Amino acid sequence: MERRSQVLTADVEFEGEMHSASYYVENDIIHAHIGGRLVATPKGDVPAEALVRAMLQGYLLQRQRKARQRISWTKA
Image (cartoon, rainbow, N blue to C red):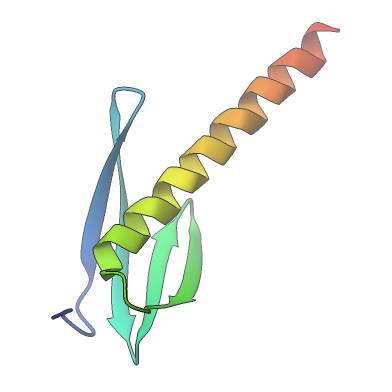
């Protein structure tokens, strides 16, 4: 059972560093603070913590890809 209206955290290890996102569940909507933005998504059947971890991991992968692309463009 998810704890509702209580701020929780989800942690992910990415490239040797720990990253965290805070989130809360209200009316079956997950509100997560990831990368300085508030992201809202329906809860569904997946536990909220697992979904927030996946969203955080996706954010970190996208940020890494953008950084690598930026480096490749500045070398040209």
